[in-house]
Amino acid sequence: MIETKQFKDDLLNWFHKNKRQMPWRETSNPYYIWLSEVMLQQTQVNTVRPYYKAFIERFPTIESLSEANEEDVLKYWEGLGYYSRVRNFQEAVKEVHHSYHGVVPDNPDDFKKLKGVGPYTNAAVMSIVHNHPIPAVDGNVLRVWSRLTGNDSDIAAPKTKKLYEDELQPFVEEHSGDFNQAMMELGATICTPKKTLCIMCPVQKHCYAFANGIVDELPVKKKKIKKKTIDFNVLYITNRSGEILVRQRDTKLLNGMWEFPMFEADESIHSIEETLDAVIDIDQTPEYTTKHVFTHMTWNMNVYRAHTQKSDFDYPYKWIKKEEKEQLSFSTSMSKIFNQLNG
Ligand code: SF4
Image (tube, rainbow, N blue to C red; front, side):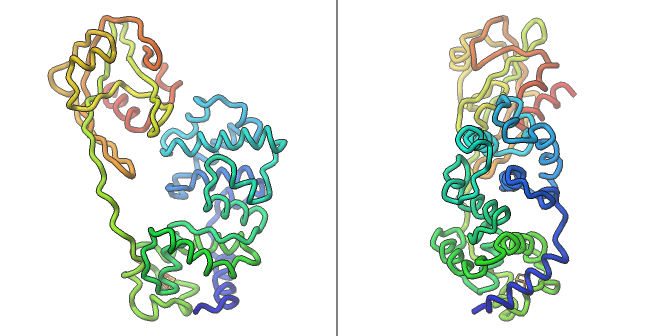
């Protein structure tokens, strides 16, 4: 059983002396803090820094983001991945603009109803900005708490998360923002998944895993389902004027991003021509092969140069000049293909 007051004092003293400087820690603007939490989902602090800075320079207010066009917003997210995050964020910000007079709700019950605001984002933003007593439990905190308490339940199971939230509740009754951030900081810098720095840990004396020599055995996490791999043929189709054919995705993954037309590798040329309603002259061999790894699947992509005489394509297809590529949002994998073929 961890002694609440002593543990919290040890953790917060360490946090106040050692916390890393981050631009979103130097503001009390809820819009900026919220943005940082959205960007930090699945993404490292150092990757986020330049994106955060550029984003708030371009969209400094709730109003400016809610009035921006989506293409422009996606440009400022390009390379960060998980694009549904920014789409949901803009939707939510629009709602704040229209339904809350441009003021981010300070009530967790309202805030968590906004699009894309899950339990973790709600807890993090509401505790950091307003000290609402809600424990913020993400993967980092699950790991740290599992070690501290010596709990070997599967941290991927919802009931483990619920148990940890209940156990952490007494710790966030006061100074919840600092406590939540301190736990995250401990998980990110000391109580890391590998090469754990127990020797430098400010709460070592409270830790069950350390005392019992089982740090490397915790947390327990059920094996992930094997990633799916899909083979695609990507067609870099040009016309007589050197323009390139692109299309906009209308799918859950990378929705709204532009790409070069791609087809599952077992799709015949006949069926591709039918889809595009055009005669396509495709090179016999791929220009090169590449892959893109998502969290849940991998794309193997054979990239072919191709040509067509057809001049008019309807949306979601369109011809663009090479110079126009920068005006559209392409996923990282498509930008790499473009650079490879035009390098
Ligand atoms: Fe994590 Fe080690 Fe600290 Fe325990 S002593 S909380 S395992 S860093």
